[in-house]
Image 1 (spheres, one colour):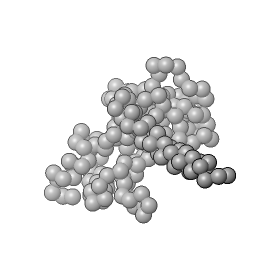
Image 2 (tube, helix red, strand yellow):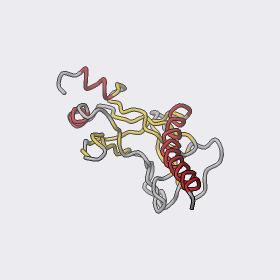
Image 3 (cartoon, rainbow, N blue to C red):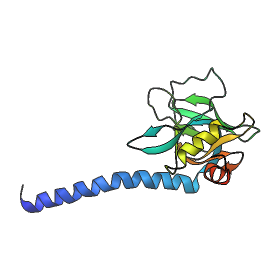
Image 4 (cartoon, rainbow, N blue to C red):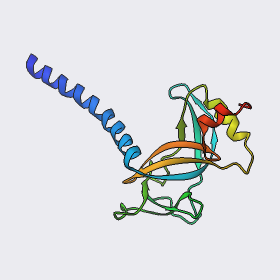
Length: 173
């Protein structure tokens, strides 16, 4: 291989390495800008990961029925009368146009791709205390945008107040 061919190969390799993360970021951004906003009821906890930093781990309450077959790829989303989204069915084929659905993050069983909400490192422990110290009457939910099966978390709320504002305005946390 001569120097010119090696240089072209190196440039193509660098370009490919830059395109992959750029595509992932652009896909999330497009979903946030153009997706349908939905909300899931959650109960957060605050783990620490030395590689990813502080985040609030969220466990959405998504399945409406226990009889749903969870060995499938796509979950059909429906909104209840309180405005919360839930998975009402799963299927192997991509749903028809106009149906709200989410693609599983696992190929072998259905798992909704919402498990963490990233926030400022200093605020995450306060968010944990706020959510665990909250009353059972407090409404804690996460909002997400969904588009073509892609789901992106857009906010975490306590009683319709974004978690970042809630813990900044409260003297207890």
